[in-house]
Length: 492
Image (cartoon, rainbow, N blue to C red; front, side):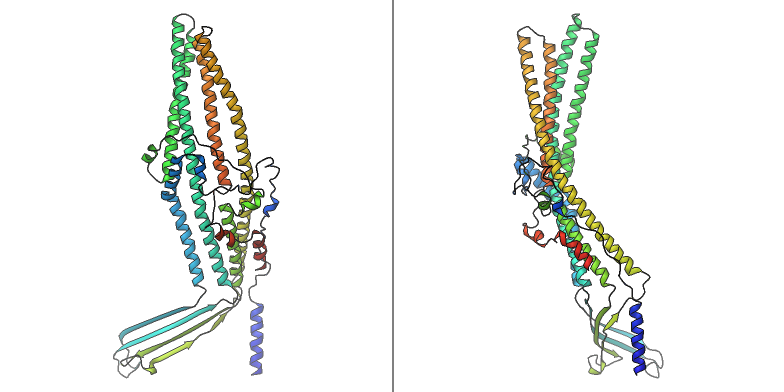
């Protein structure tokens, strides 16, 4: 007996010594500290406010009720949102499956079958008999090492990331509608200038034709006038096409056919949103941008996947039981003599698998490192995006101020040329040349104003676009701490 025990102990020791090991494998990614991304000098002189974050309905501040209605329609009907909803529901279902796998399973079944049994199997002569049975089974894989719980937590993290992605899709859609609507307004402004320029060029050509007929000008001046008319006609056609393109883009964003865009009236002149930035930009951005929150959840999910992979190196313990009734031939199935049962606790331990478990763990480590790198990249890009958009918006305002002076000067020059013509000092052709300069100044101003509105929308998006994860508290309270995810993954 003692020899048997010694042999069993030696065999167990050899088995354990030969077991696959996770030693030497660990992730190397480290989450970036948001506080290390300095932006104070880049945002020097810019208004700082703790309430700088956009509201959920930020578009109402642009001052166009038609835009408000279009964004509401897009959020209701755009197919891309349905796709984001489906992905979120799919991730939630996967989390439900992982949660269910943590508990025991109970099954039951029954069957009845008739068959002719071979001679001598039960009786000396073969005969037809009925086989009846019923059973109930119980199975439970004990989660001694927390692998199943980690798998559920990983799936839950992915589900939360998918939910954040769903909200991010709505923010992206609202900003795209606002930007397309801004482009539509600019296209109309271009059309106005193009029509005015075509009228001016026609008048200039007619006047030049009369001067050529009178011997004052020559054919060279007339051909130059013809060139200006053709160029103005091209600009008008291009402006018409810009309107069609902007309407088409809005139809797509609204989830409707091209005829829907034809019903959109000319936009009002939009007011660029008055925006500030938070004092601690990079740190505060973490909870206000959907892409950052989703990236953090994916890092946390990847760290849980590492724990799942490590738990597979450990012994797997499960409990199984079955009880039932079996009757061959006639008689009452529910007789006590027909009962059977079994109890089957089991343990298994991987000893040699050709490196599969280590390769799987190495893959999970790499997946974690990738999630960390993507989070760090998103954080760096987000911080710089806010600073760049705000500086671009400030530059746009300075350009508008300078262009306003140029527009005022061009307007005064046009007025003076008209006065000179009426006084008989100058001719009307000179006045039309001055008019061309005024139209060019108006076109540049329209372009700068549209650019300013577009930049303000981009800054709103960079600041999170009014991101509110389920009433602010849910996702922010549950979101993993960025500073702890890396260390927790290493310690699994």
